[in-house]
Amino acid sequence: MGTVTTPRIEQDKFLYGLFKDLGDYSLSYIYRGSFNPQLSDRILSLAETNMNITGESQKTQKRVYFVMVESLQNITRHQDTKAEDDNTGFFVVQSSGKEHRIATGNVIDSDQVDALRGKLEMVNSLDQDTLKSYYKEMLSTTRLSEKGGAGLGLIEMARKTGNKLAFDFQSISDQLAYFYFQARITPEWNENPAAGTLDYVKEIHRLTRERHISLIYQGFFTHDNLKSLLSMTEGSVVSSEDLAFKRKSVNVMIELLQNICNHAASIDASREGKP
Image 1 (cartoon, rainbow, N blue to C red):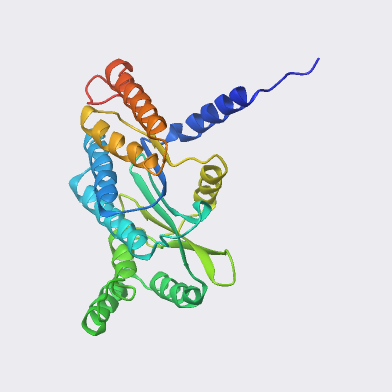
Image 2: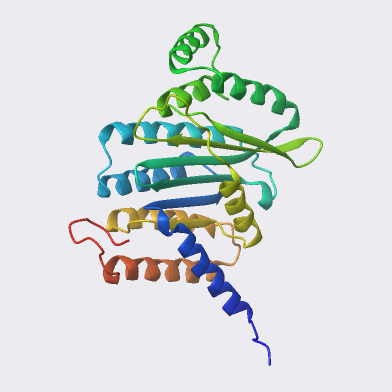
């Protein structure tokens, strides 16, 4: 007699597999949905708390913080607020050892693809000294708008990270495309910095769409970042018109997060927070 797999067992296997896949990272924050300045502040607060706990240097923290701010601003500025659920904004920050990766995804107009690809290829073709000169030139000739400077943020991210920028475009329709972007921060400057691959980011994005996942957080849990997590998880059910469902969902989230903070074992007693 064959093994019967119920939806609950399948879901448990998926969650455990996801937990194992994220085990190599000291921080994994993955969000899919609408973005606003308040959400961005909470994401930044979570990352800052985690880097403080893991003892990351102030220099690296500033570099990570800059790239995160720029990436989140780009999503907020360019996101399609009327996009279908499958095509909403996507943000990933992951830390492993001394390496940090920040990735984003958002819808853009198809007629913007060639120009944006050209800017990214230009930035990736320059070394650090040329990037600095190119940034100054662009700064003196570029007119800023609500959509930001024409590539200034990309140039500065390449300068701050010291690595090439990874990017890709996937067609959605004749009018729209989905833009993937990733910046990688490493502790040392590289003479031949690689851009890295976007395969993992695309796979995580696919899984969150198929499983209707809005938020994944794997890292240190403290009472401080608990507040940020609660605010973000409340936001993921705010669109529900069923008030009773919304209240139940938020109450369950509160209880589960408090259980982790209050009762999870500490692997390293010298560090704050529960992993």
